[in-house]
Amino acid sequence: MKKAVAGFAIAGVMAFNPVVGEAALGDQTLKPGMQHSDVQDLQQTLDEKGYFSYSKTTDYYGDYTTDAVKNLQADKGITVDGIAGDETFKALGVDQSGEQSDSSIVEVAKKYEGTPYKWGGESPDGFDCSGYLNYIFDEAENIDLPRTVDGIYAEGTKVDKPAVGDIVFFDLEGDGPSHAGVYIGNDQFMHASSSKGVTSDELSSSYWSEYYIGAKSYE
Image (cartoon, rainbow, N blue to C red; front, side, top):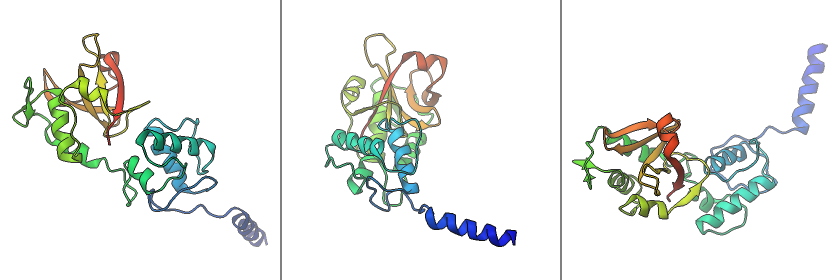
């Protein structure tokens, strides 16, 4: 009898609280008022890009999500309607399979690990920091970055915290951005170091965190 009652209770709960659908982010348009697991994925992606300000993510598309989407749309120069459709997913770096399209930049960045440092270098024979970024962004994303760190810093969209594929900047000399690398996730970035060549380092290490001045996204 208890099992039967429990079964009816569960059925009642499910009737009044429908199961949230499962799909990959980018598979469907998300709109204000929706409740879906994709909404939480959207919020997490917006948070990684520095747009979502609420203290936690949920599966509800409310005012915080709508405002975050509108801010992203305004920054990217696309229609500002607060609805997450194809244009918005593309601006977030999400393809139609629901994966963030950042794996290629990480793969290309790692491919040149160990390449020696060369002042003014912009080929696999030797890179300086901006030459390395120019080369990998052109190969992986077909993005033509300015040649100098100052020039790269002058472009792009500033983000509160870096996501995979964003460029992180450092002021090593006290007079503005003088070094940069590409963020590859898990607190790691890859760069052309004058002492070690192309290598990875921790963004929060005692050395790099002291000189870190911010990150920017390049689409």
